[in-house]
Amino acid sequence: MANRIEKSEAAWRAELTPEQYAVCRQKGTEPAFTGAYWNTKTPGTYLCACCGQELFGSDAKYDSGTGWPSFWQPVDRDRVATEVDSSFGMIRTEVHCSRCGAHLGHVFPDGPAPTGERYCINSVSLTLRPTGPAKD
Ligand code: FE
Image (cartoon, rainbow, N blue to C red; front, side, top):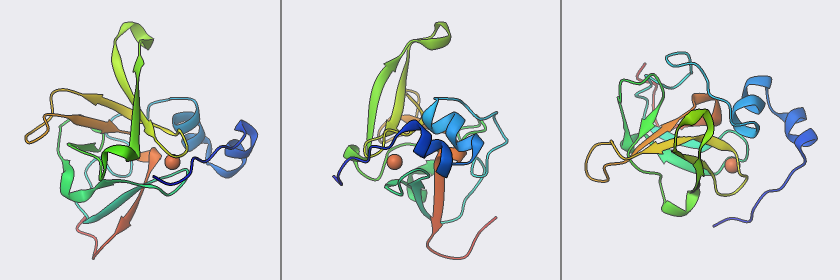
């Protein structure tokens, strides 16, 4: 794994958009069906919007019907880390970038085979690096 990236909140606030800061650094959630990637089918790799680490591949992306980009696995297990999130009266598993700590979304145990996992990720936390022509 690449070295951890540590920056002050002021530094993050200066380099991210307000929407990115609210989601990635303050654990916000973009409204469903509003993000850039919930319906994207373009082949490529999704990078952390904050630090550029490769997080998810389009080959593991699927339509979960939730309005957020959903993946059944990260490109590598060590690219993401998780912690228990008990906010909003729910017990959920929060997912963040293992390199810079950016909040990405949550992972749920109701995803498709072969992992059975659903990584429910905010579009604003991601930057798609296409490998070919856009499909949508
Ligand atoms: Fe990151």
